[in-house]
Length: 336
Image 1: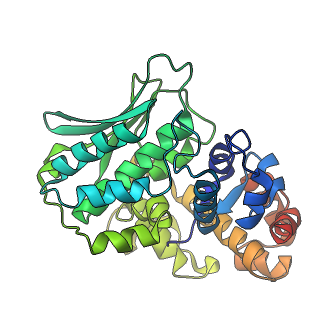
Image 2: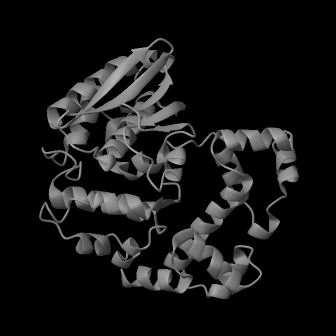
């Protein structure tokens, strides 16, 4: 799995119904090597692999792959059966229609609909009319599952257009720009992701053999694999990861490396909801979290490796990124 980090809000939302359904949130967090105290930091983050581990643990503990987001449990193995049922389809459209019907058999309160509207296709989340408030994590999870399924079935990343959400903008909405699209609309009538309808005519290239590999790698491949790995933000991030932070180029030099002008590069990054500075900050944040949680490097060494002149500057930046001091973050990770 590509290394990265996940907002603590997704951890909080995943655990929302665990205690009500008889699970022990603290025990699950510790089993996933996530410090329970991190839940108190709204800007906190966890590594993607630990979040994927937590996802599996919650599913098994509750025997519910939908984490209590529906009045009917989505028993463990349900998503696997859905995947097996769609690989025999000829086109993506047939497969997604079948997946929507299959999901309708599993859940009572939420439904998935595939809509073909001229040149655009939409995967929509519909909620039962008598539900008082949108189950935000349920909406997020369905979009992630169906988007990953869409990309995997045709073995290519499908570029998303606008992503719509039937709820108010959450405080962690920046995560959506990586997960879904840079174009976000909140307060919509339905939660949905849209893409080129021509994709629906593409053939399904997976089979009963490849589905086993897909499921064996889940949910890590579902959470991260199909984010925008071909966009300009991902290209810039990969370029920076390949060199020490003290060698990161100036923006004008970076534009030259990509054979484009600074204004064009700036616009392309803005189209994906990012800037060069935000990419550098996010990469430093993820590198810092990895160093704190997986190495015993002293703070000075970590600070210098990330391009900070002294530990105090690193401490201030890390607290801004995560809401915690580096030493506390490392201690909490060890305690987990």
